[in-house]
Length: 251
Image (tube, rainbow, N blue to C red; front, side):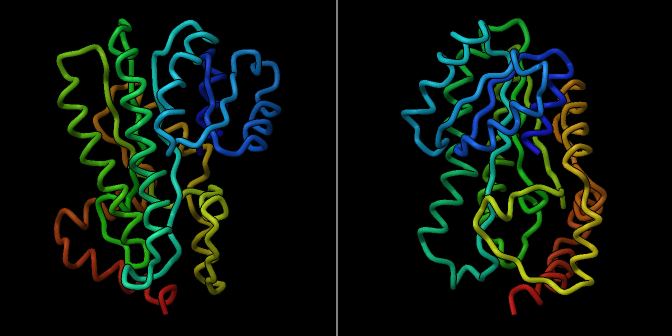
């Protein structure tokens, strides 16, 4: 999804600084950018490293001249196990990428964004950030932290020139499972359902449109919209509904 955001923003004539811990993924994005690659800079770094992140805005401004927006889209999931069985190193890894990495980037970039005539922060939470998913309890906790921090940031920045949008994707066809080092075994019926997930291209388009319209929040995908509605009506029913859907993965 991050790659699609980059490619679609480049088509809108934006200048982009792409950040990833994997240099090969960045190089692939540059190739796909084609002639627009001259407006794309690549930055290989671990967003969980606060000191390295703090140096990024200066480097971006040196290359591109300004810093007008931030898309916090990086994220990983946890192994599909119960909290009782999840190792602490896996917990820390998820929180470092999904929450602290996003927090570091936001705090590093915000002072520069506040100097611009208009700027925007887009933070990707998840459907799992407002709906408890068994087997992804810590992932959900990290995304719930993103949700509330982003909503607070929105309120704090209302008197300023910086707008904030929170994004809640449902199932999207991305490489998050492989990039997280997680293996998921599912039967043919569930694999078929997974293939119905929203494409990364569609998801990126929805997110960019929401940013352009200064939306407070955007639900990405029919499943996210449906579960948002059901959870608002009956949190208990929605939780039991998801538990039934997930029980085969947990065993």
